[in-house]
Image (cartoon, rainbow, N blue to C red; front, side):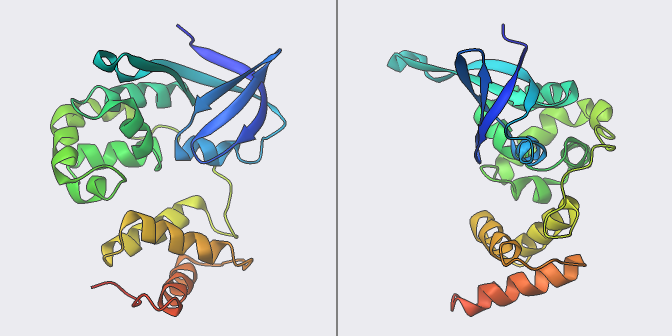
Length: 216
């Protein structure tokens, strides 16, 4: 089993890191929280704790080997817990990890089905299944990685950007609309001083596209 990989981070996109080790380059899938912490380290040496799995349908005769990478062992353990939920699997578990481990663990422990079901690929039925399977196992993760600081975005802490995203979901935006709208505001070049300011600009940008403004 490949437990870790260390090498030069040569490229990074929304789903994967490309790590050069000697004459080889390895594609390592990463979740959103890991990607954010790697985004300023392209060209540097990184070490990723890895999980290896086979993706695909064994009965169809096509299985693709995958590596998933994390920066801390606690993320590995949390990912393995999520992946163990019946019907979820590694890829959907990885997509869920766009919020910090402690935040997801708290939502699971508190049976916050509405919050969990706002994540990509997680409907209410899946969120309820996750809560039923894992809520009694979340204690070790409730304060995990709280000291880890993620890069600021346009002057705001990442937690404020995520809060703006969740606010749009509560207004009726779907995941893609919320992400795109927040990203357009952040790409404007403006430096923000508050969460409210970002949210106002995001709503104004959404309304200016002619798509109807605030959702109902």
